[in-house]
Every structure is written in C-alpha cells, then in structure tokens.
Length: 160
Image (cartoon, rainbow, N blue to C red; front, side, top):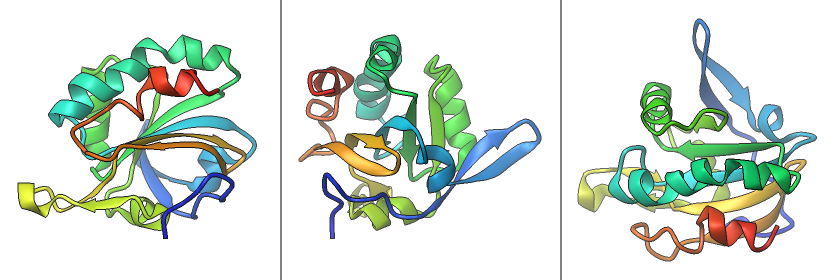
C-alpha cells in the first residue's frame, strides 16, 4: 500500500556518512520532532536526478528553510558511499543524504519501482514530501521516473 498524506512514515534504518565511516540512522532519528522535506530519487548520478531534480533543492535550500523547514533530506536506493560522492559532486552542503541500500524504506512507503529493465534493479520512485514529526503532510509523486516536475523544489515551495 502506498503511503498517503496523514500517514506516519514506516520505520527503517538508513546509512549516513559519519566521521569514522557509515553510521545507522533510524526514521525517528531523522524525522521525530522535525519538519523535513524528503526527496526520493531513483538513483544518484542518474540523468534526471543529477541534472534536473537535486539541483532545484540545492538552489532553493534557503527558501525552503525560510518556510520553517528544519532539514532537507535526500534518499535513494544506493549505498552510503555513492550518496556521499553525489552530495559532494552536487555541491549539496547542508542537505542530508540517507542511503536506503536495500530499498527497505522505499518498499515500506510503497514507492518502490522495478528498474531491472534498465539494469538498475529495485529503486525508489521519484517524489518529494513534507514530513512533520514523522507524519506526511504533502506528497508529490512523479508518474514517470524521468520527470522531475511534480516533485520539484519549485512545486513544493508553492504548497508549503
């Protein structure tokens, strides 16, 4: 079942980059008591994600934070090392990158997609959501993984 506005996020464990290497961070660690923009992408460095989707959130970081957002988090079914490299290559300082390496979070949301036809395996659908204290308040999911319109930073700014 796909997550809906008003639902609590599923419990999952992400991997993030820490000073000594990868660290585990739970859904509660990221979202409890916070207002977070969560961006889900099919894959780091993939064309639509790298050129069209993430740059909007990097460029609009201050505008989103000015609307009372505590953090902007990006998740993908990639490992923590790929997400760290993507963060650096994208100039995405100040955004949190959450590796969902096995796709457990994407599956828990009901927002997984099968990218095996392109050699990508299980991936996340493209989306952007506003989460308040672990509850989904706004949810924008793209119909096509190659589009980044409904889930863009600009679209999210119009509704928060």
